[in-house]
Amino acid sequence: MSLDLFSAESQANVGQTIPLQGGELCYYPHFFSQQQADSLLNQFEQHLPWRQEQITLFGKRLMVPRLSAWYADDELPYTYSGITHQGLAWTQELMAIRRRLEAAAAVEFNSVLANLYRDGSDSNGWHADDEVELGDAPVIASVSFGQPRVFQMKHRTDKQQKFKLELPHGSVLIMRGETQKNWLHQIAKSRRSMTARINLTFRWVDPLLAKRASRA
Image (cartoon, rainbow, N blue to C red):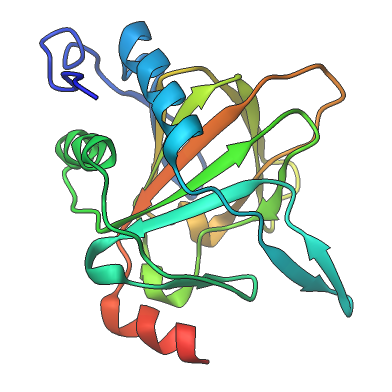
């Protein structure tokens, strides 16, 4: 796919800082142009090797309510909720997005978890990206393509602190600092009729700790 992700138009947007107690958010509502976002949504939905994983919850094996794929440098594994992904080789499109995000966030990423929400019944419950291999203050760059979904956050200890934001097609939300330490986030189920949404979460995974976690 030939698509210039580094065009002057795509670089013209500036991130919006969102105040958050004990956390740091930077929001880019139009990080990708409409043409770029449409093309990437179609490319990823059709060609990424989507898998539906299983988790054990209260002694029962349950299907995860979304599809996923994991890409990483040097085939690095990633383990969370009892699921271990083996890293796939980067596609040209994912690598181009990675480079743009590294420039915007001023950090390096070495991996991305892709999630496909097929409709409103697919979801991702309350959690934090706080696995030990992500480090003490991970930077997570979350890219959204397709159906806008509401991203909800709640503070771990101060129950009055809540936040939500609808993430539109082609947007980016960057979480950094102590966000994962102090906050949980989710994409809840919806009864509304919805089309597909793809979410890409770029992060840095410690290679040694990632391999150790996959063998645990």
